[in-house]
Image (cartoon, rainbow, N blue to C red; front, side, top):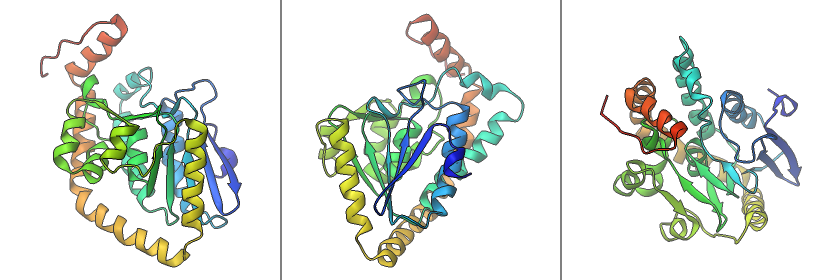
Length: 265
């Protein structure tokens, strides 16, 4: 896919920085549906082919980087073969992200949930506005975070802290993210967050390209070798839980505006 083929992603150059903005026109929360997942899956191979920039900034709207999955999309997973294809796409998305040679900066201008949080945490530098939150609430709707959360969070926080957030679905504000070392700074609003992200991207673009890119490649190679088996397991378990009674109950509870009654089935 070329830049013009994307419906929900905007591409623009700022000197040596390629700025990619997630902007779903009819949804300020940038929720992930089939089209969004398709575009994110094809984004990172596109970025691997980038030769005009020396770094990349990923950003979202003021309201959200991406607020996670669109519940209206989830019934599609019950179609024959759909979940299996999605699992393959999900694995490709994360591995292709890690294989982008240029340094990736993520400006979390608004909430980053689920897949959005995974993408942010697997970038090379993350900045986050004071009004944004970072979280992975998969467990709250009865499913495993098989889209990268089970590797992104342990890599960022270590397994003990990661389980605290992954098993509860609790989100992290910018202050706590800074305290935990996830982000170097927390600008006060979306505009200043985007500006701070651009400054980090410019700083990385000004470095020695081969040294920057090869250092990233070496670290990400370790990530892939270390986390590969856990990621494979999580994608399989994620698909399994999509067919569980607990997941169906969670979706029904959302529609009926009540607390879910989970049974472990």
